[in-house]
Length: 159
Image 1 (cartoon, rainbow, N blue to C red):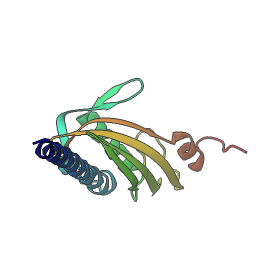
Image 2: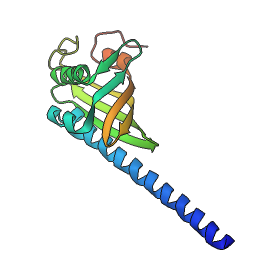
Image 3: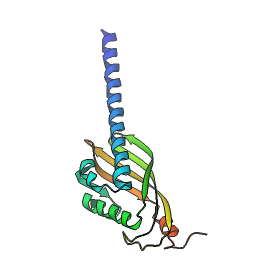
């Protein structure tokens, strides 16, 4: 009887672990798709499929709705017409996915308050998404804005 209980307990733990792992892989797939198709390629209509309606991007001083977040993304695409935002590393735990990403582009237009400089920029950032029921519900992000402004010639470079 003890053997059956031990085997049953081990089976439940293994099944729970596999389910969690599978869910984390699914969440990473959602994150990868959002980065590749929405953030990088600008397929904004996909946001309805991949983001929760009550999505919140938690900023330091201001939380942004999905509409505000997408408007900012469109601004980056206006400023950098050839922008590519590549997810380099994805780590999932529970319902959170952390993405270390690299963005590259040429500042050929105006957007998000940037003038067109014609210069290339490359910067790194980290985004944490909480994904619930296959949809991105919350976001926390940080990226190297100082380096970007220096690369664009809008701030002096450190020497």
